[in-house]
Length: 151
Image (cartoon, rainbow, N blue to C red):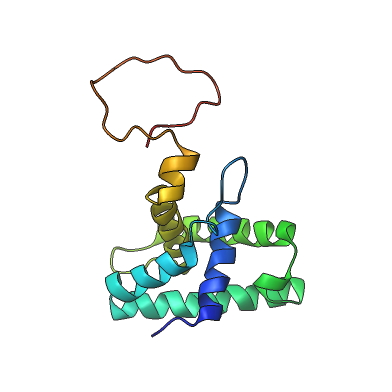
């Protein structure tokens, strides 16, 4: 199952709703759609790939049913609200699922977004403080509210 350029752009929008730009670049700037596509194709088994692709359709269908438009054409507020509903749904699914049951498609999308973003160059150099090679271990350093985490 291959991803089209439209699929990758769509995944960028999902990821950017999960991790939007603030003072630092968001998930779209880190090209999460492309990262997610590679991870699904290269690391997921066929069953999980199928669940993920079907989930993309389910998410867009849910958007059309709820807001009369595809996900990429609804407002940011509606995008956020829709993903919050799906996040609550996946939490309930994971709480009640048996070991052999598959993961929820939105959980896959969210996990891949977080993994990709927080291991990306943008995250390590702009969203967090980057100390490439620390000189020594400091177990207790001063922290001021709002400081970035270390990469």
